[in-house]
Amino acid sequence: MPSPAERPSNGLWIVGIGPGRNEYMTGRAADVISRSEYVIGNDSYLDSIRPLLEGKQVIRSSMGKEIERAKKAIELAQSHTVSIVSGGDAGVYGMAGIVLEVLEHSKEKIPVEIVPGVTAANAAASLIGSPLSGDFAVISLSDLLTPLEVIERRLDAVFSVGIPVVIYNPRSHGRPHNFALAIEHARKFYPPTVPVAVVKNALREGQADPLIVTLGEIEHIMEDVDMHTTVIIGGSESRIWRMGNDVKGIITPRGYHRKYVY
Amino acid sequence: MPSPAERPSNGLWIVGIGPGRNEYMTGRAADVISRSEYVIGNDSYLDSIRPLLEGKQVIRSSMGKEIERAKKAIELAQSHTVSIVSGGDAGVYGMAGIVLEVLEHSKEKIPVEIVPGVTAANAAASLIGSPLSGDFAVISLSDLLTPLEVIERRLDAVFSVGIPVVIYNPRSHGRPHNFALAIEHARKFYPPTVPVAVVKNALREGQADPLIVTLGEIEHIMEDVDMHTTVIIGGSESRIWRMGNDVKGIITPRGYHRKYVY
Image (cartoon, rainbow over all chains, first blue to last red; front, side, top):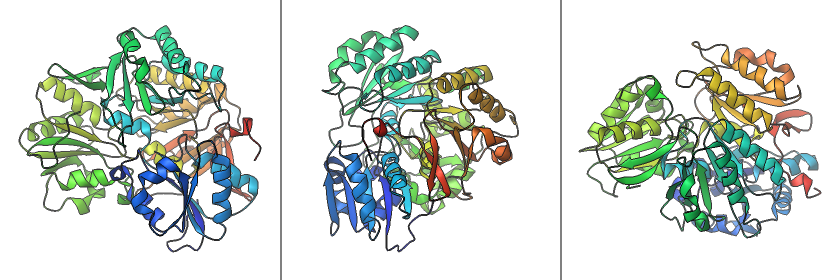
């Protein structure tokens, strides 16, 4: 991919700023934002990087206005340096896909670089032990852009082979029932002992203590699941992780126990 | 999770250092390493963070010695500050799982914090456009710790629902045929037009230009796949991304095209 030169006159960086707290941003993300004339993003992401925005042209956009935001960024990047920012990793339910689609459609040629970030799956997992030690899947329950029956088939497929699943967008006002539906699908394949974690605002403002339960107990925490949470449903080999008597999180053994004694 | 206090006298950080180039490390990772008396890891990871190691006790370990490394880190962390470092994200095919398993087994109580990093899936994806825009799966082809037939079932499950798959550990001297086997499974479900990317040493020393092909053309690049590559097999909706006539990478549309005109 052509990346903007070290002192470019124009170009577009599509930047994953990480989970939210600035110490979890990469140096590269901070660096390209500092070299941008324009920074474009929605309010919550721009607020979380406020210290980096001094002296910049800042364009605030709304959730749901991704296409307008992409068009504006591409237009400005014809003659300016522009960062369009996304929470987590820009390539995972972020701005990278739609920006590149709009760019391709526009037939414009501009230098583009995508700067990866720590995505919510890894941020949430880091707070609850090691639930994703091996293979895993990432699935969004938002049916705004993907039909619900497609999402249900995907859930069944991954549950059927027992790998942990990270659930993005588990629940919102517009779709209050999708999370309960996902749990129903999990119960078709798993015993009630499989662990589930609800992690709210992982590594960003408003972070709450993660909730660790099992599939059998999940009704107790249903109301805690909202659009600010990431849910990790363990796989067939995942188990609760304890230190002494305290429940600390989830471990999915990678398989060392099949080969070694420790 | 109890995290080591800001000036702890002892404790263990399990640190994801990102893909390799230091600018892709988080500030938190650099910070906890700087506050550690001991840093433990294998040679390639320690080499990539050499500037951070001055004045530290450095313990070099070998690939395959993960359990010994975990035990040593836990033992030292009884009375010292210790970072055990992993490439990418420590929770994804990294050290977090085995360290926590060994810790649990030891019955010791020490402060532990896991520091997330940019994992190879996101690093590789960032170099080839937006192949993981929506749901995706991460699967390792290493059958060292997971039986091959389990891996094959997992591949079939995710291919059957058309989501992109990031392949870790696609090929090595010990298992030269697993990648070809994975491709056979993909062909059971996908037409030959589905795009595949081979990304070597993404965002670390030795990075090569990514190779973008289709399932139908993959024989041409079979020899380029090795233990330093991450392979992304697109999903049923993924397509080649072009700028003008140049092949730039892969786009997996997230679904905006089903709702909007752009």
